[in-house]
Length: 291
Image (cartoon, rainbow, N blue to C red):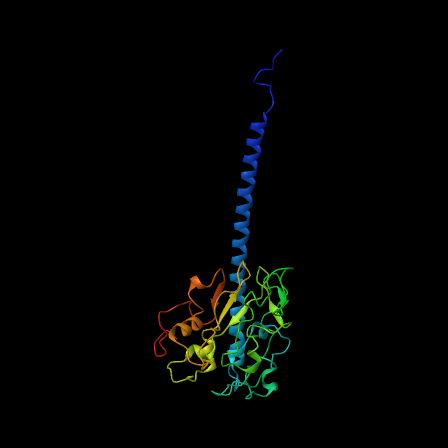
């Protein structure tokens, strides 16, 4: 007796179609889940960057009244240290034009504690690390890799070339975002957040040489940057000058450093300015309102 169509099993073709549909549904679900997870990480990174910005605001309020305090060489580690950093790359006195070796430093004691009488000084840590919101880590070394066989942190852009810039000697080895082993904060993708501050050349106004610009003015353009989902720090900060003089930049180089490049030049980085809107102007007017 022949089987009727109502009780016969699936054919191989029908089974293959069902499996293909199930695979497609699983693929779409996985893609939606991946997109949702990545968007959640972006939201978390934006929240963490806001926390870092608020911590820097408190830090500057306390420290800026100190004679000789210079914010232009701060890093994320300054918010996390058990005592305020003073040695390599710490709080320096203002540096005279032409003396970029950091010889003029304020007394260390002035930057390592809070003075109730004058209501100024250091009273950190300004940002507690280790919680769920801002994971603690250490800044990597240039040759380290985030994963076996992956690109090094230098290749990821965390140790830019700075030898041609007018910076203190400690920074000419590329450690402008952090020194290996010092406290750091990781973004949701495992890369350290960095604080970018434009170099002095970004404020040269004429071809006659380096125009003195206060360290506070440079810090007004400071921004917190996350390397984003791809872990590559794409946002330009220290534009490498190829001129023989090593000091005179054209308008394009200044714009790239002051405004961290156009948004389309940042890759998937997340950028948060500390003191100003995220703006990119066609020209930098030192006399204008947008400073």
